[in-house]
Every structure is written in structure tokens, then in C-alpha cells.
Amino acid sequence: MKSDTSKMEKSSERPIEISYERVGIFKRISAALFDFFISIVVGFLFLILTFYLIPKFSFVEQDNMIRERVSIESGLYVMDDEEVVRYTDYLSEENLTMDERSELLDKALTSFFNDDTFVSEGISIYLDLKKDAITSDNQKMFDSENVRLLTNDDYDEEYYSFYLDSYDLALGYLMDNIDYSSASREILLTYILSTVITFLISLFIFYCLIPLFFKRTRQTLGMKLVKIALIDVDGFSLRTSKYVGRMFFCYLVVITLSIFAFLLPLMLNLGFLVLSKTHQTFVDYIFNTYSVDITNDKIFYDYDEYLAEEKKRHLIRIEDKNYQPAIKK
Image (cartoon, rainbow, N blue to C red; front, top):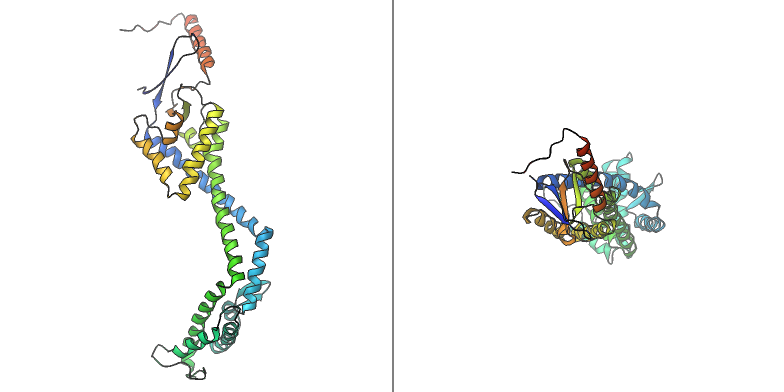
């Protein structure tokens, strides 16, 4: 049944009435979900390219150099095959006993905690850790001179575990270093902003840009798949100027703002779709536009095209000798 009707008058011409099938909510949501899925997939492809390019930016290269320099100066990282790696990872790859790894790690930690650049009065922190260290069977691990008390090989793993825990603590102090934290923060923000911008670009392409090429129906790929069109209140195609205004409002208010406003604009938009009698979204309500089912209908560009189509149909009916006009009862 025809349920969405638009009327238009032009000059002194008689009023016309154009009717379209109303689109079901499920069909509209299906189209939106299809567009969302495609935009996310393409967004991830864009993101792979973006993450490949980010390290090549000059300011990111500089921040990485600062972070690598500070890491190596701390002694908690080493250069291995032109790559900065954790000292613990480096030791695990070497052909060393657990006791030998403990000794080397102890030297690195003592040097780190002695450096005021990283930890103010850090050596006292490290000595307190040794003072309080106990084994799983509650035996003290170090004497008053911070020398290992238990020389039995059975305790080698527990001593190494102590040094690993101390190493993790040292990494926390390293991250508090001004140069290291500043460089790390700038790199992290770059990746976060790049991720957000990348997905916003992908959403813009599939929700806003593609309908510009479908001038008659203003369809996204999802809308084209399920045969939905966006029309103006007069029943004709949406003019480019009006669509562009609607597009930017939708993109900035509904899509972009939803990222920073806990999806509230998006929920408002969907609320209008579900609750309104005409099944308009909030954006449709603001711009007085409608989504209609065009499975069996055609969208006209304007009034002139509609008249030309009607004249064409009228001539075909006259030429058809078997044509009998419908009699209204």
C-alpha cells in the first residue's frame, strides 16, 4: 500500500501527487549496518597503510630516536641487531645459566637505580627491595650487605624471578622520565588521532560521498542493495545543495559527535526513526527529507521530468488500440 505521499504545485499547473512505498525499519537498519560493515573493513585497510606511514613522519622519527636513546642510557634496553630490545629478552636469548642472568640483571638494575636521572634516591629503593625479599618458603634472600644468602641451585629460579619483578618496577620509573614520557605520549597521541581520523574518512566516503554520485536517488551502497532512495519533501530528487547541507550536518553532528558524546546523537537519530510516524530520522526531520522504497517506483529529478514521463505514457496509451481506461466506481 502506498503510504508516503508528496504534493507539489508549479506556477499555474495543476497540483500533482506522487506516492511511494514506506520503508520498513528493519530494511533501513539493514542498509545502515551494511554500510557500517563495509566502512569498517575499508577503514582497517586504510589503518594498515596509515600505521605503515606514521613512523616515517619526521616528528615521529625524532620522538622514536629520543625514546630509544633514553632507553639504552637506562641500561634496561640494549641494541641487538639494530633493534632496541629489553635487556631481559636479550639475556634470555643468550646461552647463560639462570644464575648468570641474575648477576647481569642485578648489575643493570644497580646502575639504573643509582642514576638520579631516572630515580631520585633510587638506590635506597632497590636496597629496600632486597631487604624485604623472601623465598616461597619464607627465607630471606639477601644478607645485610645485599649478598645472596641461598647459594643452592634450587633457588636460582626464585632469585631470577626477584630480579624480573625489580626490572618491571624499574620500567615504571623509566616511563616517568620527562624525555621518555614526552616522546611516548606524542607517539601514542599520533596513533590514536590517526586511527580516529582514518575511520572518520572511511565513514565519510560510504555514508556521505558515495550518495553524491547517485544524483537521482542519493543512495549509499546499502540503500542501493535494498532499493531505498532519499527524496525531498516534494517527492523529487534531493538537490545537491540541500544534500550537501544534510550530509555535513549528519557527518558532524551524528557521526563525529557520537564518537566524543557516548553515541548520544546516534541514539537520538535512531529514536526518531523508530518512534516517528513517518519513520524519519532526526536528520530527515531537520531537513524535511524522506527515505522511500523504490522496488516498484521511479524517482523523478524534477517537475519537468515528471510531466515528460506522463506525456510519454499518455501517448503510448492513445496508440494502444486495446487500451481501456480504468472506470472508477
